[in-house]
Image (tube, rainbow, N blue to C red; front, side):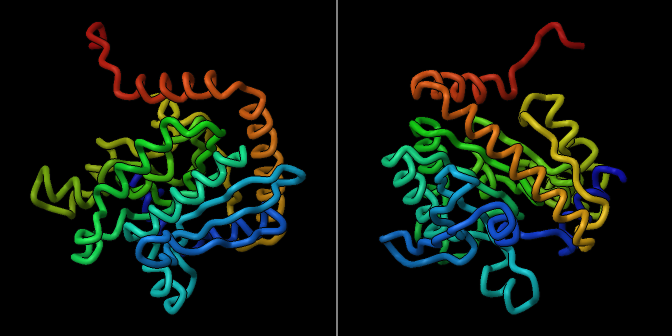
Length: 268
C-alpha cells in the first residue's frame, strides 16, 4: 500500500479501537471519570488496570464503533476536559509510581467553539509540559490515526510505538494539501511528502518500534495472537522502564525529544 492508502485504511473503521485494546490486554480495569473542572469527556477513556501482575494506568482516545457509539465518543476528538482528565490520571499514576500506557487514535483535538472557549490549546500544552517531567514510565502506542497536537498530548513518552499501518503527523494530508496547493485532492502527494507512516518515522527516530499487524483484524485467531504478542511486549518494555531511576528516565526522555528534528548541515 502507498502511504495514503495506509492512512485511508486506518480510517476505515475495521480496526480495534482503544476500548478493544484495553479489554484484550488488561485485567481488572476500573474506569475513572471527569477532570474535576468541567465534566467528563467520553473521547478519552482511562483508569487503573493490571498488565499481567503489573499495576498500570491506562488511557486511550476512543473513536467508537457504530454510529451511536462514535457520536457518544465524539469520533475520538477530545475536548479540553478529556486532556485534563488524562493529565489527572497521569499525575495520580506518578503519585503511586504506576507506569502509564496510552493508546492514541484521533484525527485531532476537537476544534469547536466550546472547546476553544474552555482552553483547548492550553490543555494540550499543559499535558506536553507535565508529561515531559513526569517521574514514572510512560509508553505510548499509536494504534490508528495520530493527528497533530491532539495525539501528541498523550504521546510525550519514554517509548513510542506504532502499528505498521498507523500514521502520526502534525497535520492531515488533506489539510496539508489545502494549505500548500489549495487543493485537498492532492492529499496523496501531501502524504508522500509528510512521511507520517511508521517506517518513515522509525527511520527518523520519532518512534522506537513498529508493531506488525494481522492481515485481518476480524479473524479471531489472528487478532488473539496479535493481542497476546503485544501484551507480552508491553509487559517487557514496562519492566525495562521501571528498572531505571527516575532521574535517568527523565534525562533519556528529554534527550529523546531534543533530538527530534535535528538539523544536519552536512546532509545533502
